[in-house]
Image: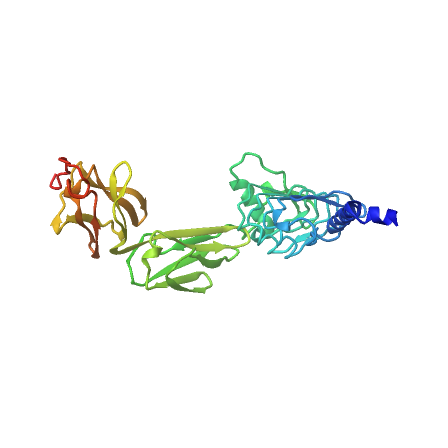
Length: 398
């Protein structure tokens, strides 16, 4: 009885804690695939026996897949494919290495969720073909493909083009196999009717008034015949496109001022690569004063404002209904310009009670104008509000 009592207290709690710790390690070990080692940020699969057949995936009881930044796989002869959903959980993945393994194919959308990928190494696998569509959305700094038995065809010419346009002087010694199973250097590979496409946009300079509509036309050419598509980014204005073979048009209606400065591209893409022709949309619109507030004090007093307009609006201040002639004591300062938006203030140097009153800002360009007014109180009247006399004031007329 005394023995049971001793184990019923803190000692029993420690024993249960130890047991749960062992169970935790056991479950984590089960969560990491056989032949692999897993940490909070890395998966390493290098043991050829028994090896892995499918791409390694972590169970929910293990580390968060989003925190995995590196996956290293080597000597896995039975790993032949990367499926479409194999990497979708590894959104933070930066480095992917699969070397000396049996990799034969990669699904077209295998890296769709892996926008952080920077380094891919597929050295000495069984790849006979690899599409550029796998990687076109990635900003890769390294793609290593040495030692794969690529088939000499137009489908691998993009790899040759990539090597030729790569800014780094370090090029890979890549080969492909012709119909006679003879090694041909990719650098010397010549295939008829297999070249980069071209795109030609009919509107290289585009300026339009807010609310209007425009139509852009594009022609693409190439062999193999390229696909044509439009890249409009985050365009706010309503738009629709029509494409027919090598011709395309893009109709933009009721154009918003928020789209001024945005880039629109016509893209031609085939097996070898892509070309694009782009235009920057310039939208002219009447000014709008989006922000005007009471003065704040820093090194100088400032009446802050924000004005939007294109072309750049002319600004005019009024003080108590009369034009305010600016001087070194009181003047307009633009601190930040964001394309068609201007952030600044009316700066006042040591204003007194004589500068209290109504300040109106008028912004005007050829498309219209806007105005807003605020009341400013810098200081009370001497002897009445503040209990002392001030003699200095800013001359409002310069």
